[in-house]
Image 1 (cartoon, rainbow, N blue to C red):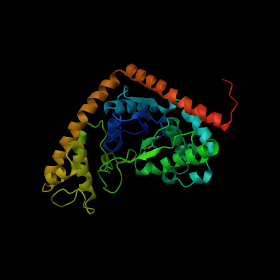
Image 2: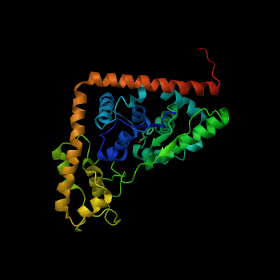
Image 3: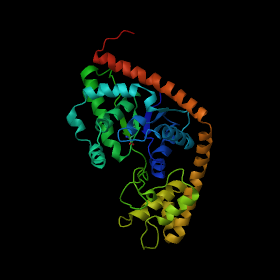
Image 4: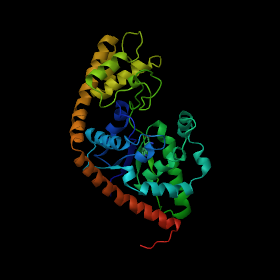
Length: 337
Ligand code: TRP
């Protein structure tokens, strides 16, 4: 029996921050022990909004290095770049032709993103969820770790696989595609902005002070925590809805210090901000330090990093090509191999 398979990805745009790490990448590291894991850098998704063509390659490499620096191992996992495996684009086209337009018109994230883009909305942005479905279905993933904002996209992938492919072309014993399930990650995974406890920490927030990037220097971390939004109340609490900022900073502290939430709650219950903030700053700096060291080491030898991505590409391609072939046969294309 093979281990259950997991696939996930992050876009190579904007610096990866502690919200991405605590909420996603750190859980991927643990999954490597129990699952067969595929992690891609989704550069095809990155071009669904205007992108900088001078930076895309470097950011792609840097994102892969961050994965590895965080503990995703090229031996245990398949780490690859989405555009290096052409089956993603090809499957996306096939799925496009099988996906009803009215399913797509319900996609909430598209509506939100397209408002931000104003006049400049590409068909690719509309098609983003189908490309994501292709990513997932190609690897016959059993589980996909996703946050709240991606659940609807995963649901779409399930519906396409089940209702548009398996039920039309497969039979019960031999489904063509695996129908993936969401993997809901542990509590504490939702890290909020440092300047507004009601909105999620985001790569695209124009305010740099809203997030701590994994590569921020100790000085920068210290400054951002000093500026983080607080309130005039003594004692740090986790679950007081009136105090979202206190809750968020305590959650970050608990996640990074390794203290159980209830212990963290007790430890900080009587602290004022003047005691808590330096403690939090130290905790963040020391937990990022080993990641940064590993990252800069990896980026020193780009040839080696590229070689690792080539190996990832080969491993990914073998799996992806098989699924693609299965679907093309099911659709009825002339096969001359
Ligand atoms: N849309 C995802 C996000 O923004 C990134 C992504 C692309 C993804 N393809 C994926 C995540 C496949 C999981 C599986 O977070």
